[in-house]
Length: 182
Image (spheres, rainbow, N blue to C red):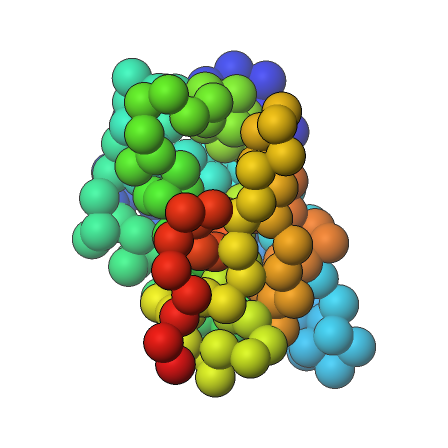
């Protein structure tokens, strides 16, 4: 894995080119077998990290590449042509990354963001849950205060990268929030 932050020299074109190289070299040889076996491609995630693509949309001042939606779309499209599962893993990673970046300033996100920028941290969303009828905007799980902080108990029904991600962005009702009306 990468040991220093990627240099912010990637452009939309070079990001797409590097993605195509990863797709040809890492994904294509194993995509059909991985799909058939339901196997998670750790090799793809490692290659993404080595090329700085895990931090594609992370701002340069936070150790990322600092590219925007156009580069993200180009990368996802290039992966989707070879391995739709890896494209989904990457899509959920970038969506979770955006959520982490948008966290309140008092949230302790610096370590995760630094590790993402270094290509060492995969994150994902854990929004879908049993009982919500797949309405991620209407969670039924709840955060609870326990004196030392907050804990969440939830039964998530579908999580991309489950068991492989370094962190999960979880949706829940706040400790003070009202229960869902659905």
